[in-house]
Image (tube, rainbow over all chains, first blue to last red; front, side, top):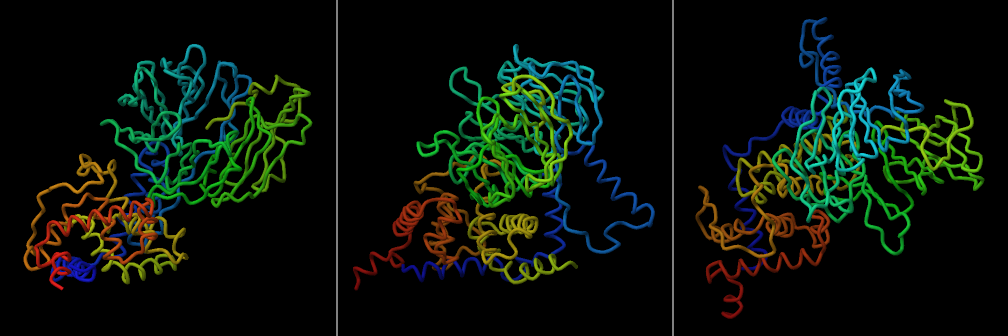
Length: 379
Length: 172
């Protein structure tokens, strides 16, 4: 059998299978309808506040006009989902992206990580002893759960948060659900605890050994995750189409390692750079923020496009000026908690994509040693 | 219809026939092929703004199809299958077209592990180069070579003597 005859047999078989009644052509409508379903599943965990808002937005014109959206012409392409901006915790007050504030009885020194769910609840990973505390939207304590580590992982749309419980099972608290759901533990040798690298939705978590993301955890257990090369997922774009990943540092890049953007559908890296760290997607998924530093302070901050090309950046002048925390205020602005470790002064500014046009949010004033975070950002 | 949707519709009409056949060779089942193609094209539609201006839309949708088909975690009906480098002695699936000289070839193709079958389909049906096949599958060119070699060896072993290239070469 020659290669030609082999190819001929494959072609004949494929042609036979779809002759006659088989292989009715797919229509644009059927493909778009399927696409909408996929988009809905990807956004399923946003069922609470976000989905309700969308439903209202669709239903209102329908009711007013007496027709369905479909009867008024073709559906537009699915709108890309957007993540909320960061909330900031400072001196027992949480400031939400819209400027609303709420008092929360906690000291920043006791908090290692902060998240705000779309239903308004505030979730904190606490130090000593490790625990996860959930506050109602009004700032009252709702529940405290013993945890295996002082780490929480928020979903890209802030509609779910996950952590490893003290018994090493995984807990997922979805927006709109009163109690966290228990998922199986992350398979690890001995009594080691695995890590939750990303929360795709309330039922699909990317997990691993803190170095490499190796499995998908669901309520039914774990399934191996096949990727084009080993990496650890550190963030997921709001639409789920891209993952920000970090590679195991090599001797050439021992200090910070290299990071990249991975397309999980295509199974390939779409961008890679050894000049970025801790990539965070913007709320519209069109840019990423990179922060580089040590001792809980960052000397470099960069806003990049999806080719990982810099759009704007900050670099310390070497006179003690550093970034303590930075996060996306909205799709085109980054909120930055600036500090100076020589003078222990602090300020908060809001900058544009070019790391330009700074708007002062909190004027410069005295504060704590910048090795601790006076302003904690949700994320 | 928007320009975006018109572009996508033109691509859909032009390419779906060929892509459906590729899906069938990947899955070995007509209904699964239709499902696979619809899901893959839906995902392509969601990513259309990113890929529409590239020359490699076919490559992108092939990647989606192969990944969707190989996915071990998104689909329950595939969960128990583990990828392997060896060709198992499986019992081939028979369908209504299972007659004629091509049947033996098709039976062997269907016993190949899912990833090895993808290599064969992309290399021989889609006529991709080894490098292109490696790129679509996210594996090395060396793995493409070895998977192809194993698959062809299995074909030689299991196809009737009159289809076996070794016999034909000896006859010459």
